[in-house]
Length: 249
Image 1: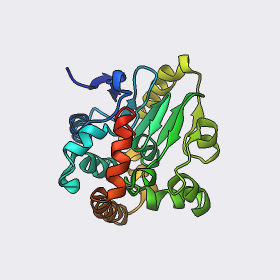
Image 2: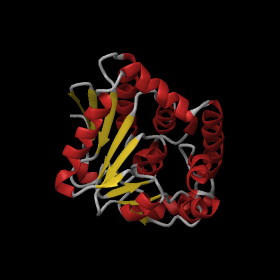
Image 3: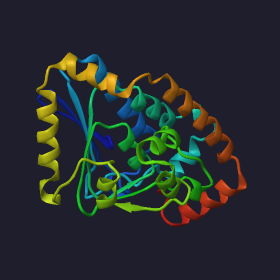
């Protein structure tokens, strides 16, 4: 049984994080499944849009720390890092449906998606510095560009959590949707996007994002700093504390 469910809704590839007993905390195997799905979508001319959602009232609590530590000997070859590269290099439009916690990568994914819809109870947090680590997924570069240095410092350096209302105000999500309507709303928006001329849709997306080489270079720079931070006493102490609280971030 996989913790990432893959299905189709016409030209929309639907990916569901299906580990609700662990708040959909992402393991290396889940990252591998997402990478494979992204690559398949890029190659399949019948897929126009990817919809990514959680299950059990949760988007994702971030990385499964126990699994993360077990595979952290070479961070730049880890599935988590390769997922971030795949996310940043994605050509297929990405739609997110977010309910409940969206922690760590669950928040930084917002910087790479095209449309994001969240429920009123959704909440976001990037606790990298609190874990003795550094930001990932290009967030240390993309977030200041998106919302300004002062607000980015509040979210990345102070690690402050924020609500879906704040996310909407910051321009990180498109709309707040009632819980009971989230799945249908996100699916409807994804299907509508998928109905548009395929080549024009992808070309417009590429033009909006511009040259991705600097972003990918910055992601690699983050990975080097992340690898160094992983070896620090600060990170080891923070990991032990988080493991004692349940093993997710």
